[in-house]
Length: 290
Image 1 (cartoon, one colour):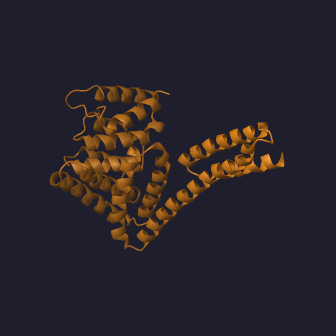
Image 2: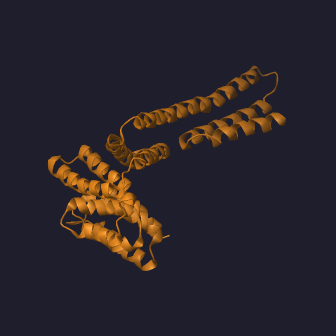
Image 3: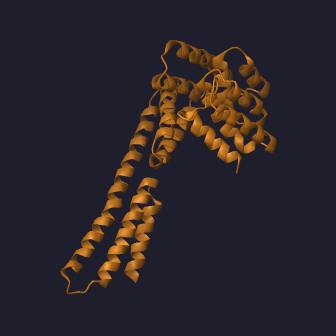
């Protein structure tokens, strides 16, 4: 009986300390081990097979231990990456980290569910690293203005594809990191969005993502329903996902109508079933209908 309690404690310690994919593997091995233990108890002592049960049980115990070692190796690789980034100058660090964080943003949505937790953790660590390099208010505003121009230059100068998407997402990531330090008021954010600059619209959405405030609801809703590009609409959906917990019942109903319209197909309806915006809009709809 004491041995069983000890085994359970060992397994619980392993399960509590590992990632989701490894938890599943550990549970499978736990079930297999329990089955073997039952079989061993029912097998007569005269049966030569009985001596092999402990061997198989030990092998099943080693599987999650090996997995745990692999899991920790991946963690150490992430920690090493962050240490390397700390050696860069702050200005260079923001640019490098924003590219990495943008890649993680895209990869997280496309990765298997078992890997998403790890990717999110690394992405958050990268963004925290970048936030530590943010300049003072005036400099932050100047950099946001430059980022709006960089965004427009990238859209004009690069062919559509993953490489351009990563570069554009990097701009948004940098803008989010600068948003709080820049200290824009609600009217200033609205003015950024209302202008002719597509880059300024993207910067305004990045600010809303960083500092979600329900006063921006109409601005973000307009960006979803009348976006100037699929990329802008995706960023608007991300902003709306951040706003969603703060919306009232009327706003949720209005949002549902716009999302269903944009998912209906036809000219100007960017939320198609083969796009990443479909998954994101589905997530928002599910949340507001609960």
